[in-house]
Amino acid sequence: MKVLTVVGARPQFIKAAMVSHEFQQRDDIEEILVHTGQHFDRNMSELFFEQMTIPRPRYNLGVSGGSHTVMTARMMLGLETVIQEESPDLVLLFGDTNSTLAAALTAVKMRIPIAHVEAGPRSRSLKNAEEANRVCTDHLGSVLFAATESGLRNLAEEGLGERAFLVGDLMYDAFLHYSDVVDSETFQPVLVSIDGNPIEIPPHYCYLTCHRSENTENLNALSEILLAASALPYPVIYPVHPRALDLARDVVSCCKLDSIVLAEPVGYLESIFLTKHAAHVITDSGGVQREAFFAKVPCTVPMTIFVWPEIMVDGRCVLVPPERGKIESVLNRTQRIDDDYLPFGDGRAAGRIVDVLSGCSEEVL
Ligand code: UDP
Image (cartoon, rainbow, N blue to C red):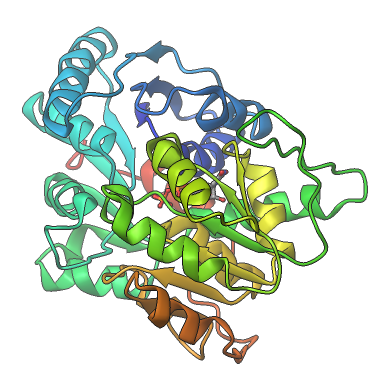
């Protein structure tokens, strides 16, 4: 079987890495990797391919920037040519980015079946930029892989239960696998400030990531979040997504937030290291939220919507509107850890995904 995997953004490289490694163990599936170009900076793309030994993409469409519509349309044009050239049996997609939606629309128009990994999360708000991408892709998909029970339930409620498989979360696979690397004494995390200086990681710190459009479209939300974080009694390490860089720099310098350390985006291994050793995580990233949960580090999510209900338990992850006072009021809570509570599977999602794909009947293909 020939599988065309389409990736474009940081979290997709991580998920695709785990499935690609599994494909390499089997001889019944040939994988062709396509990078749309959505994330293109070295620290947002190349570094992940190196750290996670992801095979080089055969195609890079070089599509980045522009409005959501322009980006999606240009990706579709590029993908049509690739699909014509490769005639895959299946298109494999991850998550909820513009690259995911563009590939889903192109594949369905060209009558190529779609397998969608991380199907089922729902914010139930179309104001959330990713919601349309995930809902449309799930409804166009022939095989849907849910990471959690709640995702599976959402798919069933939308009449998609018969094509859905509960496999666990690839982010958990990756976290367990790469924890061995970052826990080893030889691992040296590399962190660089936005001014190009090396950053030494302090013994106590908060790891902060913030890039959702809801929080970075204007100064308001981001300044509330950074002001709240700066009230913590230890430094805050914030590797800044390129989308938020200008705004973050402005807020930190205008409000003189000396405890906030602005860094270049870090590699996956550094991100896992920072999460595991943090006193607290503040993030609007779906991936970092789950990683804080895996690492048993308390996490505060300054958002009004969420898609991973399973982590919002026992004070472990708390959703709070992006308002300074409200954020500050939850930062010093205690969490309760139930070691038997493992809602993201057992770290073997990739194997299950590839088993299902290998067994896909002629009917699906
Ligand atoms: N991440 C990273 N470097 C960073 C920030 C995040 O490697 O500077 C990792 C993080 O550990 C997680 C993934 O990127 O595995 C999450 O990606 P992102 O926050 O861009 O997307 P989301 O998960 O919100 O879709």
